[in-house]
Amino acid sequence: LATGRVRGNDRVQKLNVLAGTYYTLGDLGKTVSTTEQLIAARGGNGTADDLILLGQAQFQLKRYQAAAGTLEQAYPAARRAGKPLAVQVKLLETLNAAY
View (tube, one colour):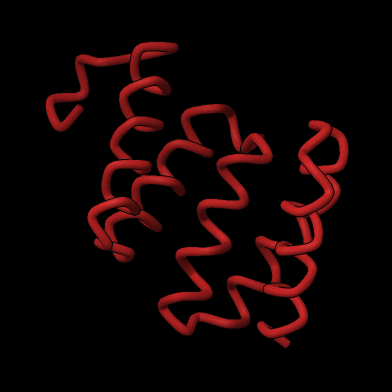
């Protein structure tokens, strides 16, 4: 990734795995930066999972204003993607806490 030679769908797939790995390891700063790169690699249109991951990491880093903005986008994306009701409720609870 650092060389710039990985492009297109391969780049998206690698960034997706990397962002999830950083989150699992608890490296929230790298989670945020990698997920932002992932969304940019998708042409600025993050998936519901991208937005949820980014919003959760921002919230856990106490970047509440950024988290609120991201989670406001994540909730309708999650509904469109057919995410379970429990996920949607958790998003709304986290969004409320971010305010």
